[in-house]
Image (cartoon, rainbow, N blue to C red; front, top):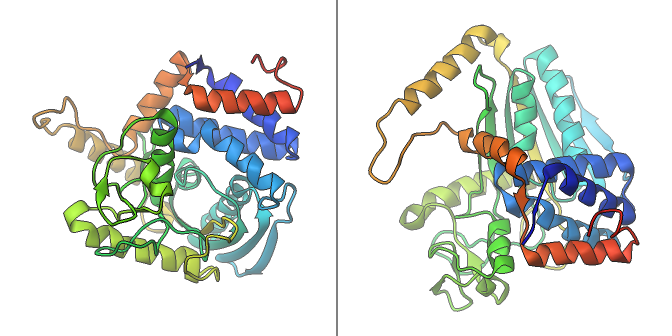
Length: 349
C-alpha cells in the first residue's frame, strides 16, 4: 500500500495515457485533473480511473486527438461536440470559451456532448472562480448506462448527475459545492470495492431492493439511491433537473442503455460579478460570509465548522506534503500497464 507523491503519480498517469495513444498535451491535462482529485481527497476520480480510461481507448469509446467542434454559437452561448474526445480536455477548453464570453458579455452558457468522463466536476467552475467569475456546471451520461433509482423505485433510471457552483472570493481556498445528486458518487463505491471495505447503509439497494452495505451488490444488479435518505425526493428532483440540463438540453436524450458509450453531457455557465456589483466588494463579502459561518460554535462530535470547499483545500495542502495513498489493487494494475508498455522501470515500479 504505497504512498506516492503527486508529481510521481502525475508522471505515471501521463506516461500510461501516452502509451495508450493520448498526445502529450492530452495526457498532461488528464493527469493534472486526476491528481487534483486525489489531492482533494476524492480518490474515486483520481489515479484509480486511469486504467478505465485506457480500457475505453482500447475499445474505441475514447478517441485521442478527437476534433473539438463548435456546432452552434452566439455571443453568449456555445454548443460543442467533443466527438468522443477526452472529457477533461474538451470540458476545460469549453469552460475557457465560456469564461471569455462571460467576461465580455456578463453571462455565458455552454452545452457539450459526445465526450468521455470529465472527472471531478468542480474543476471547471473553479476555473471560472479563479478568473473572478461565478461558475456553474452540471453533468449527465445521456442515453447510456444508469445506476440510480428514482425516489421510491428499485430500478436504475438516472445517473449520479453531479452539480457544482464556485464563487470568487478573497479566501485562500475556493468556496464551492460539488455534489452528486445520488447518495454518493459512483466512483466512491468503486473505491470501497477495490479496498474491500463496506459502505454505509443508504447508499445502494441490492438486486432484490433491500438495503445493503456490500459494494459488490451494485454490480450484481443493485442500484444507487438518490441523495436525501428519507427525504430522497429532494435529491431525486434535483437529479431530474440536472438530467434535463445535461442530457435533454444537450441533445443526448435520456434512458438506460448499458451497451452505450459513456458520454458525459454537460451544461456550464459563467457569470461576471462586475455586471451585477463591484467584484472587489463581492469577493470581500464572500470571505466575510465564510468567516461568519466558521464562527458558529461546533455541535457535539465536531471540532470546527468549515466553509464549502475548505476541506478539499486543506487536504490538498496536506497531501502535497505527505503524498497520496494508493491501494495495492490499483498500484498493481498501474504496474501491469507500465510493464505492458515497457516503461515500468523508468516509472519506478
